[in-house]
Image (tube, rainbow, N blue to C red; front, top):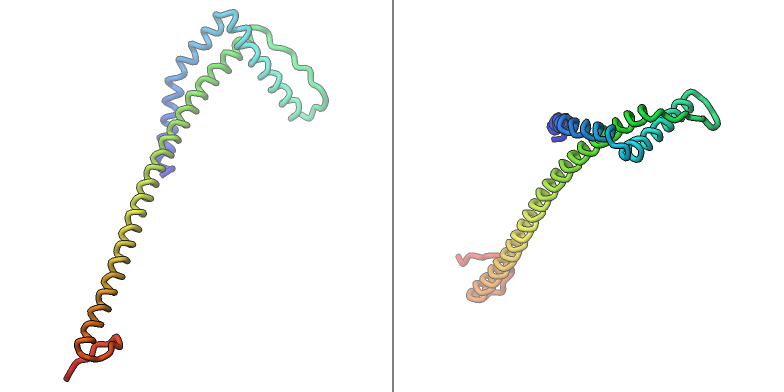
Length: 164
């Protein structure tokens, strides 16, 4: 079942990405126009990303000790920050879509499980009714056998005898 859903999931992801891309581009454009948005929303994540990226590169190259990472200039930081915000928006939308699909699927599975549980309970109740019916009929047969044996004047040994 998962194999059949996977291509649909990819298609859903691409669709969400295509729909959210223009919105992300509008966010980027707005970020470049607004001084407050540039200074407080775009630049701090861009500087942090640059610092982290440079430190990871230096560690991979084998550098030890403290690494001085120069800050990005304002234009580059705004551009990188706007790009990060746009990608974060796209990722968030895609994640929400995947979560919604997972929730829908798990709810559907739960409903299916509940239906099976109810069916099992119904079957168990019917089996108990049949067991009770069989016990009742067995008691009635024993009573009939006792009465038949009493009419013949012989004690009942549980076996049927013919008078010939």
